[in-house]
Image 1 (cartoon, one colour):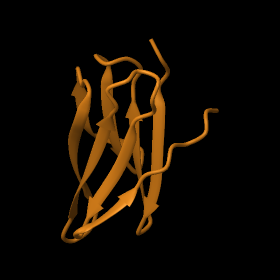
Image 2 (cartoon, rainbow, N blue to C red):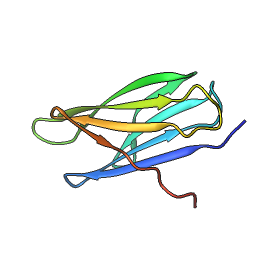
Image 3 (cartoon, helix red, strand yellow):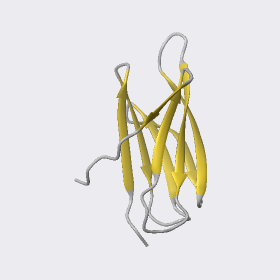
Image 4 (cartoon, one colour):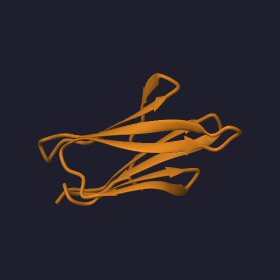
Length: 95
């Protein structure tokens, strides 16, 4: 069934966290500063797009691309797209 993967990046004083559940039919969760802002159930292979905003005046929109590989043993990849710049979101070590 696999294991969950957790990705985290700090940007402009805010934390962006992505939790990808195990298996192809579980969930992907996006958190900003520890608060859930997007939840997708039943992802599969391919790329999922998660939309969020960083708090501020005005709020700053961003999106996260979660690429689920077609082969089950491979680790998903997360990329932050913010202000026209793409940046990988590193996986956190298991606690």
